[in-house]
Every structure is written in C-alpha cells, then in structure tokens.
Image (cartoon, rainbow, N blue to C red; front, side, top):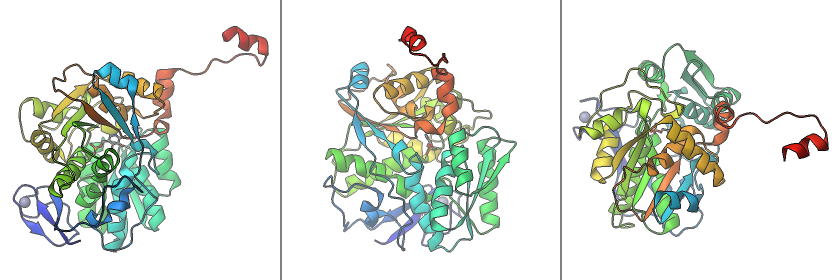
Length: 392
Ligand SMILES: *Cc1c(COP(=O)(O)O)cnc(C)c1O
Ligand SMILES: [Zn+2]
C-alpha cells in the first residue's frame, strides 16, 4: 500500500521516511495511505499486529515476536462499580516484552532495518527501552538507551540490560533524556524510536483495529493512560482510519487519563487549549507516565477534541486503588496501566456510556518494588503446620 508522511500543522508532504518532524515548521508528522483498497477483513480471526499489514508502512518482511492479539476481558465488578453496562480491559501487558510498546517497536525496528540504520536509540521511563532492546536483539541491530538514573522500575531495566542494549543513565529526568536522544539521532545515524517517530505510532494504532475486530463494532469510549501521549493519538488514528474505510460509523470518545503530578495535557484540556505548558518536575508513582513535556500533546488534544472525549486526572491513591481492583479481576498491571480504570471510576464523568474499553498498558511484573510497597511482604513463620494453621 502506498503511503507518505504529512505534517499535522502545515500539511507539508514527505516521501522520504528518514525524518521525524516537519523540516518546514517542526510540526509532528503522520503517515497517510491511499485508503481505496485495503486487503484485510475484521472477521475476529487470527488477531495480531501484522494481520493489518496492508496499513502498516514498511517495505520489507517484519521483525516480529508475534505482538498484539492481546485479550479483551469483560470486567463485571469494575463495570458494576462504574455504573456502565459493559466494561472491557485490553491487557497490553501480555505483549512479548510486557507493554503495548511492542506494537510500535515491531514496526519501528522493521523500519530501522529497512533504512539500514547503524543503531536504534530511545529515551525511556522504562518500557520503551525494554521493548526496543528486545526487538533490536531480534533484528540483530545495536540498541542505545538513555534513562533517568534511579527512576526506572527494576523489571524494565532488567529487560533492557538482558537484551544487551547499551544503557546509559543520566542525572536528569525523562524529558531531558528525550531532548538528548533527539539531538543525537540527528547528528549520528541512530534511528530514533520514541513516539515522536510516526512509524512507531502506526504499529500502536492496531489497538483500535483489534478492538473492533474482536467486538465487531466500536465501543462508546476508550480510556487510555497518557504520558508522552503517543498511544492515545495512535489509537485515535486507528479509529479514524476504520471510519474512513467504512468498518465503523462513529468514532469512540477518546478519554485520556493523566496522573495529577504529571498533568500538562489535563491542564491544557481544562483551559480549552490546543497545546501544553511543560511541567518542570513531574512526580507520580506511575513512572511510565511521569512526563512533564509530552511530545505528542498536540496530536492527543486533537484526538480528544475531535472525538468529543475528555482528559481526566487521577491521584496516585486512585491509581493504586484501580490497580488493586484490576488485580482482583485477575489482571496484573503496573501502576500507570491502572490509570485508565482509575479515570473510569472518577465520578466526574457525565457522559452516557454503555460500553467502554480501558487500555491496561503494562504488566504487573514490570514494577515489583511498587507492588511490594502497596501489598506488603509475606509473613514469616516457623516451618510447622501449627504456626501456619494459627494464621489461617
Ligand atoms: C509508555 C507507557 C504509557 C504512556 O504511553 P504514551 O504513549 O507515552 O502516552 C503508559 N503506560 C505504560 C505501561 C507505558 O509503558
Ligand atoms: Zn509543517
């Protein structure tokens, strides 16, 4: 399928793939296709990322670990609590590296190989680096990761290290790490795989395809945890394309959920603005969304306004509460992932919603320290039946 890149601000068009932002106005880019004939059906069968290859912008065979095809769980107790008839959770934590980032990386790494890049590079709060390292290993290409020192959860760091990325921890936060990799990628032949990369987002839009493929229709709303705001933008684009192709009639409301301590998009939304004021020192237990200067803010705000959705902020306590509710339904997630459900359970929602999907973005095993800190350690006793029976 033919495709090209277009600037979302000035509309300038690019046919060269090795570009991250508009060279005229520095605006964000998006991939557009000729949508006249698409070669896949939404028939509920064999669901995974590369089922939708016809709308994935690469020209070589994919580097894949069989990502996507994640389960959509019907969560009755959460539904009851929210007062909405049908609530589903799409568990992106069950992707190969344990987060939705794999959908983007399978496309992004394939593009890096196609462009014959020397190495791939990213800044990361953890999951991007874990996923990039894994896919880079699969492709046998060098991976360079820049992280905020001592701010990355153990599970994520372990993955980046084990899959042999060159991991560099900086004395600065994620936003600074991203500035650095953006500069480096332009200076050297390193392919940038943060979500500013429009090809990566193409992989992530398959979340929308899969939801409609499985349900057979579009739900009323999608709740998404928002950090750098790539995922909510990508999912919205997926729905826009499905509408364009006639697979759905209406777009779901895009509902972005931010942590109170890292809420620049929430603030912009409340003031009705199209762009954000960066936040200097973002802080939240949900490290994957601890971001003060989200690069995709403009795309995300457009998605929210165009779909008549909204942006919600939730406290760390509300996030932990939602994480525990998910755990009680058998769904183990890291804190950032639970933000979507925390948003759903806020009573500030005044829409009339019948059916919604919450995206659970990453796996519980990513952040064991957080889990132990909220659940407590197991009690230690003498190794006798008697002492154990006393406890039960
Ligand atoms: C990356 C990530 C997010 C944030 O996604 P953005 O596209 O940056 O908004 C949320 N949760 C988890 C678990 C993530 O890994
Ligand atoms: Zn432009």
